[in-house]
Each structure stands twice: as structure tokens, then as C-alpha cells.
Length: 78
Image 1 (cartoon, helix red, strand yellow):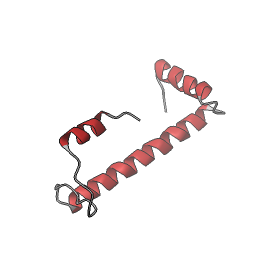
Image 2: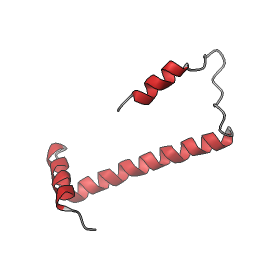
Image 3: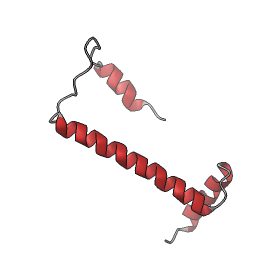
């Protein structure tokens, strides 16, 4: 795999910041996070397909989220 100089510099900064032992450790961690995200995306697609693009039902007694709550959740950054 070839990295551009700016990508390599970013990766080296990640290694220093996270106190990883090597560039390989940083790449493994990146792959682990990408795999987790892909799993979450696949699960959400399965849920959407199961409910045929309609909103999934909520637990009895739990009110549906309002448009404002959904918008606020969309703006949340982790």
C-alpha cells in the first residue's frame, strides 16, 4: 500500500498521539474501526429493510421521537 506524504504524516501523528507502537498498530486500529462502522451500517440497512423503510416501532409506553429530537440527534458528533 502506498501513502501520500500528507497521509503518512497524519498516520505518524496518530501513532504519537495515541502512543501506539508502530504504523502497523495504527493501521490495524483503523481497520478495526472501519469494520465496526461497516457492521453498524449493515445492521441499520437490515432493520430498514425489515421494516420496509417505515419507522421501527417503539417499546410500549415510549413516545416516538419528535422532529426536533431527531434533528438534534443528527447534529450530535461523537
